Image (cartoon, rainbow, N blue to C red; front, side, top):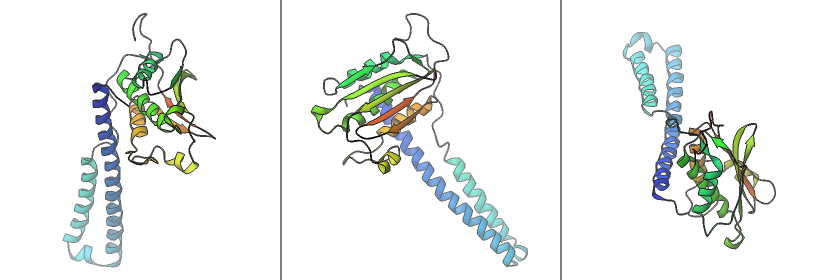
Length: 237
């Protein structure tokens, strides 16, 4: 996949955010284990010994340890990046055509969409999210000659949905369950962050990514948020 420089820079930034979020999650889990052990030991020491009443340093030690763990958790910051600034509604069919152009002539993409479909999402974010899903779908093809992917957009209860459908070998249940885990990949040499990048971008705008597989092939479903207001005629292209 040959991304233009603006999308490549965005991809690197989102990968860094995904990696940092995963690291924060792991560190928080370790710190929570320390906090749980601290509370347990404090209870045992206070109920089974007289150290709390005999040595004032003991309760101060447990208070300091608990406060330090809580402070470290706060210093880690939020688990997810804050939502970006508001963006004008995006014409989804136009973005589909733009993304398809990124894969020419290597990719074999078929595009299906209504004439008008708008979503509240940044155009570059949507382009990169779809590019990640299409790239993943093309990789699922048995051979390059057989690579065929369908990009299908439609309304689902008035919310825009884009499906990326491949005709690969499908996903085993255990693989499908882990497909959205960071750093999980069945392909040697792959970092396993493409789907996470797409999901992180979708979630920034109130959307999400789902993976389905039944029989041959797989389907990635990108759910978006319906545009709160459509642009005037001639805008949004």
